[in-house]
Image 1 (cartoon, rainbow, N blue to C red):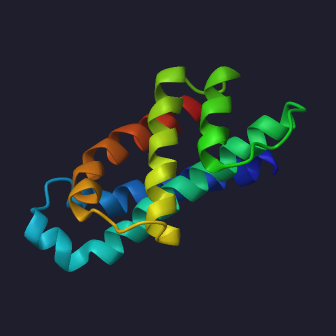
Image 2: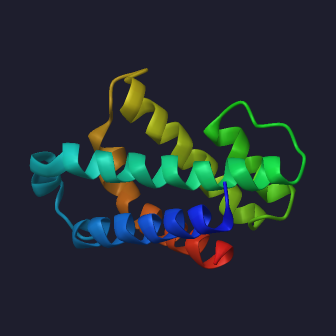
Amino acid sequence: MSPDVIKKKLVSLTGYLNDLMPYRKITFKDFMQKHYEIERILELLVMTSSDIVFHLITAKGEPAPASYRAAFLRAGEMGLISRSLSKKLALSAGLRNILAHEYEEVDYSIVHKSIPAALRDFTKLVKELS
């Protein structure tokens, strides 16, 4: 992935954050009416972020991590992003897997409560990588 592609992905992340911003204070009742839309935005945030992180890791000659979670944690270990952020993003990867693959029943109260953290953490990721 070229630096230009990484820049485009960072622009995409910013766009997804802007799309999520109107939902930062959404009530649970209103969230349930829009949850598919919000879930998709959260999924895009995780997938696009992990694309960037995977590339940065492999560009350093490291093997590709086995999962999104592992990629975020490895990025923290390597100093590509802060360790505290890497741990938070690793948790978001778990939520993404539940949403995308329906490994277990979705607890919508957790998804609803994750919106402010996603805004905070992915905004921080964009800043750390920019």
